[in-house]
Every structure is written in structure tokens, then in C-alpha cells.
Length: 284
Image (cartoon, rainbow, N blue to C red; front, side):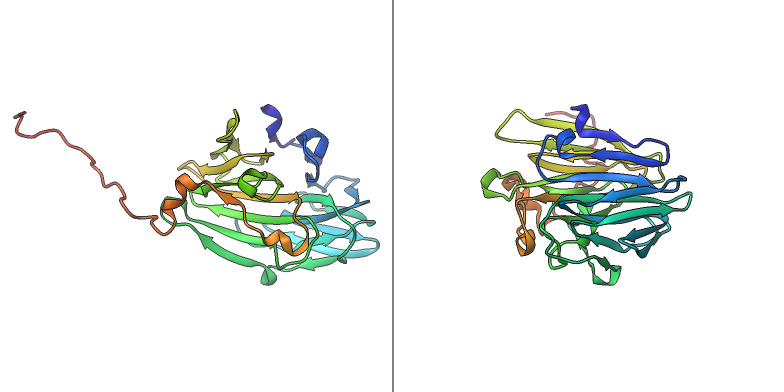
């Protein structure tokens, strides 16, 4: 199970690296890169499309001699642009000392050109309610064009849950097949959260205590995450699988046993004290 939960290296260069071989799946690869070292970082897309998401600092991405500046003070201070790069390109990344970017890739045919998506183009929504309230930013999701890649980020207030009701996208009950990664940040960074992957039709139940700059892979099953009361939680999702083009809009499958809460987030909320001692001391 340790292979599903990765911790970032504390050094320049590639600090996290997920490949189809290391994750034991077909499509998705993900890196987190600190390109502020002397050599920067080079990425050749080959037969893949990639999306570059800045996480902190300023990074210059040069795609076949065309420069793009990607800046973000931190994930908790601002939205950021996302650079889409098609197959057959050479990308060089250089950055300042604090620069960090995430790169997700998936197999592609080359249907779309290089494009810098701006925050103004991205859908932003607040989902859920009660203790499952969170903000979801659609960084590279339908109708923004890509072949297989889907990218989201989420903000979860301290003490709240995300991904509730739990959902899956592994073929179960006709759901689409999508591989997924979660990259976590916390504010303040000494916080932690919990992430669970599980199936109801097989012996799979994984629970991870995740910290700042950790990554979890989701190869199958329902999944959900929660922030401990001490820190706000951010996570970045890359997904890729069988859905191509406009089919990337097809939703996952939500666990039926927990769907009752939709529209009833604050119904039957427990007030405290829930029970008290019998003040009279009489017991019948």
C-alpha cells in the first residue's frame, strides 16, 4: 500500500514522480518539479499531452522556443494559468528559488495546439454544504479542450470533507475508467488530512494520513478525503483514462448509500450536549 502514498523529496528537480509502471495503470503520469536548480527541467512530450500547473513562485516554460511565464505566489493565495502542451514538443522549465510546478501527462494524438489557459476561462464552483463544503476549480475540464487529461483543484476548510458522497470511476456500475492522483497542500503546512480508497465489491480498503506535499494515487474504488481541524486543505487532481474529448464531461458514479445527503447537508445536525445526566437522580 505504501506505493499509493508518496512523499515529496526536499531538493531541486523532480520531487515526485508517478508513471504508469510505478502506479500499475495505463494512462496517467504525474510529476511535481522544483525547477529552480542550475539545470532547470526538460520535458519531451513525445506521444503525450501534458498540462503544467504552477504551485508556487515564477517558472518560465519554453515550448519549442516560445516562452510562457507561469506565476503563482502559492496555491492558497491565487488561481493560476495552466499551460497545455501537445505531443511532439520539447519543454524547458526554469524558475526562481521558490518555484514549483505539477505536470500531468496522458497519451494523445495531437488534436490541440499549445495553449495557455487563464483563470478567467476556468469554472469555479462551491460544492456540498455543512461539513462537506469545498471549492472546486475546473483547471482543465470540459469544455476546456484536451484529449484525455482532466485537471481540478479543490479547497477544503479545516475540519471538512471533500468527495462526499464518495464516488468512483473504475468501471464499477458502468462508471467511466479514469486514473487519478491527489497532490495535497495544507495551510498551515504542519496540518494533515485523511484519504480513503475502497471498494464494496472487493477486498480493497486503504486509508492514508496525508501531509503537506504528499501525493496519493487512486487506481480503483470509491474515494473521499477529509481535513483535520487544524489546517485548511488544498489538493490538485490529475485524471486520465478512457474518456476522450467531450466525453471527459461524463460524471463518476456516486455511492448510492450516501447520496441521501445531497440537498440535506444541514438536516438533523446534532446539537450539543446531545445527552445529559438525569438531574433528579430518579430512574424508573
